[in-house]
Image (cartoon, rainbow, N blue to C red; front, side):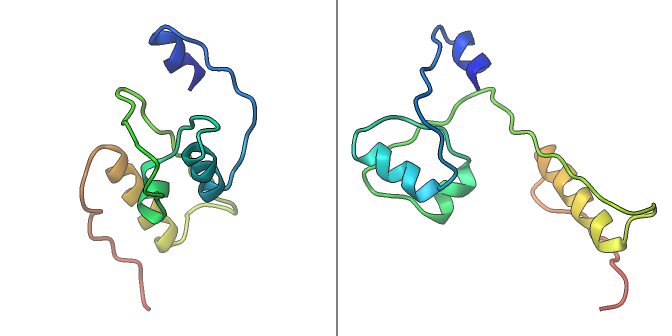
Length: 101
């Protein structure tokens, strides 16, 4: 994130860090600071006093980690494939047979 800020001509002064999206929004709404949040956090809970602007050219990185010996279970394969499709801008994950229910 700091690299993106530098590309736009400034270096952020990070005073605190919080992983609670509701608390972060409350601090912003109170005028105490600014923040970056993923879009999903804003869809789940959004305070009316919080105004947003999308940051262009800032891709989100998502990593998947599995454990155990390959091959991965069908449901794991399906999830990883759906994440890859979404990351490439796809709207729907492909139909994947995840085995018996």
